Length: 99
Image: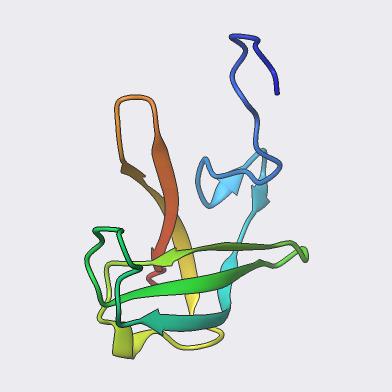
């Protein structure tokens, strides 16, 4: 684990749909709808945990938010947004991309 004050750089360009002249498109590869909270964990339910596929091949696990859970579909185009958890932590989540 690094103790450096240098910022951590992600291998995925979450800066927006265009980074360095490239277009980055994500889609829902697979998902589950969580209806029950984990024991001992206070989270709002119902929510979507999804595998998000980058057009170039990598996959990552995140949440799909900003849409009713019944509208989430495999192949649905999504875009990243960041949800602030604390002053130091923000989570990358996804919402439907307007076509």
